[in-house]
Image (cartoon, rainbow, N blue to C red; front, side, top):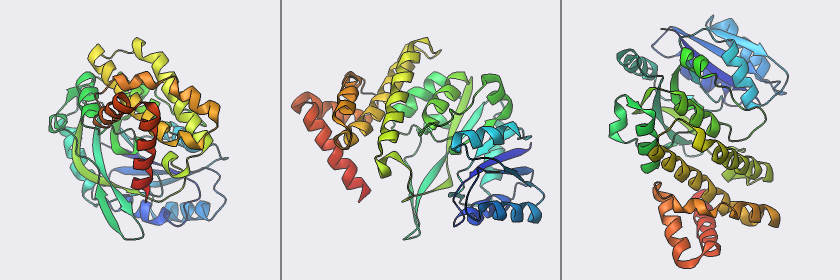
Length: 324
């Protein structure tokens, strides 16, 4: 079974070689690596071509800049593999045997539309790894989407990133799944749609992916107004769609709790936003009634005792402490 790796490339000349090397060095050899140069203004286009000349499994697509989502969609349109893996080109895979191990699992459970795997945060300055929270052991075998939603939210391990999955290309096609162009945190609605459209899936605690930290661009790092607005709009959009989704009511309640978790992230950033943005956000404080997620449960407890202003302060303090 052929695997297509899709790598959007933009302003990552410092990290691109390490990323591509970690993929082409995989002992599982039946792969293609699609480098989508998203109009990168640095040396990335040349580096992409060098890799294509070095390894015939590497394909390069040069395009006008359209953002991460657009580059992923272009890569998907040109993929020929049976399975798809997305990789952010400033990250890398940890072990050369990782893909073989994952594909052994995929082959053992062909009924799964996708298999999720785990990651470690990689801190470049200290060259250290911090493993992400483990998935519930019950997810290590095929489960339906309702069970997956409930267990992921309850354990606080909702793996939104598109980069943490081996996905059947046929399943992606059947679901009609695309990334929303021009949106930050586009993985959130994408993963909810993926899970909603899946019949069975599973999540294994194989720490395959190194997620590089201290890079600009995340909402927690930048706190920018566009990031804030995009996530708030995602919450609004998902709330509009949730009752029409095919999840069970119990799974929908879990999804409400995940959206409450995203609400908490925004609440920790609200003091940096214009006053009207904070007021817009507070219209959704009712989400704290859904306490499936353990972090939301704590925030809801603070809110019940001390009110939303104190909850905002605690979340902001916690967020600042984590970032230091």
